[in-house]
Amino acid sequence: MDIQVKLFATLKDRVGSSHVNVALPDDATVSVLLDRLAATQPKLAAAIATCVVAVNQEFAFGSTPIRSGDEVALFPPVSGGTPVSGGAFPEIFRITAGAIDLNELVASVTLPATGAVCTFTGTVRGISSDHETAQLQYEAYTPMAEAKMKQVAAEIRERWPTVQGIAIVQRVGRLQIGEFTVLIAVSAGHRDQGVFEAARYGIDRLKEIVPVWKKEIGPGGEQWVEGHYHPTAGDVK
Image 1: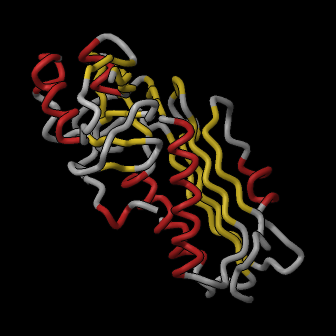
Image 2: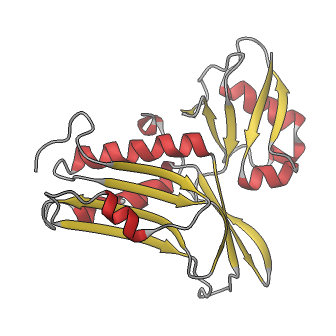
């Protein structure tokens, strides 16, 4: 069978294409796929050991089977009342090329019973301790990223059941110094009902399992920034 493998971030740059095609046996697994890519795509070979594989927009591992028609993606590691039931509280999960409207998103998770909203916003930083950045470019595997945002929200609700609304929004495209890159907003009846902890958990978890990558663009050139977290079976929803 012939499988098209989607590529993102550094892997896309290595090959110069957003995908590669690979011929696999009918009983192929992820391990077979990676071995075949290492043999047939020399530009990818050095990255095979650290890359992440997704099959049908879910993390996959060595023994995961690959079947004809599956959507396969290869990418580097990605660069935190009453119990909730039945979608009782608002949730927003969004990958967007447009500007993040902080007031609109806070309003969207604020209910008549809300007494506290905690937000985390990431911004494009121009000066770091060891280099200067002019722009950031963000890329996402959008359908899987939005699904994993929902997973992050579910994990938040499991840990802090009194949380009300949750918004997780990530920018993509080229962003200028000072622009918002990501927003996590969490609401609850009171400030002591987990909103601080939940917002921190939300951004930390996003950096682990939501497939989004950034490229730093500055006077010294361009470079993708990769993470170090590798998903495990526990990260599969």
